Length: 180
Image (cartoon, rainbow, N blue to C red; front, side, top):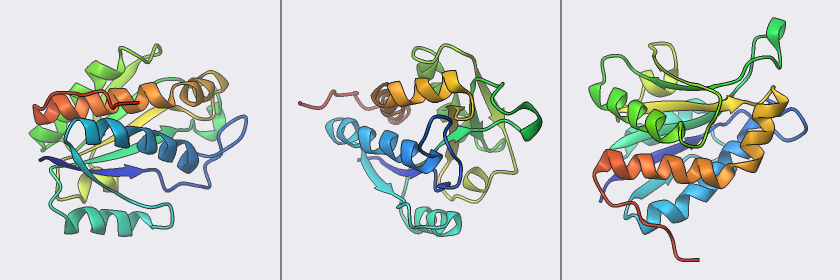
């Protein structure tokens, strides 16, 4: 069975406009993914909110994970706070598996997210640069934009389902809806 390391944001200090924070909402998405992953026969390991980023990367690298999925939300720079929308999907540029996974996520995510998606190679993000398994970091939308923040809040399960479908497609296993 394939295994994914789920790494929802550890950034409790990033407030969502309208209440809550990035860590809270990204953990809700990871929580909602678990039934989909179990039903589809995909094993998972997860970070915990008490961890540091270094501990999460080390835990991922200590395991036998087939892919590392970091789940985040974005914020605009101070000068343009609240004005940006969109989803960004990052991967390490020398990882063909990471690039393939990023593109699968983008293809599935565009079916649920209406405001634009960019797939971006990066060498600066620790979770895509320092993990042993091919890694993707998704910025699901902008938590400092009221429209995007509300979209995330109202689409926790849709985001979880889309990411789980992407994992099933990446691994070449059937996506199975969990029993209620």
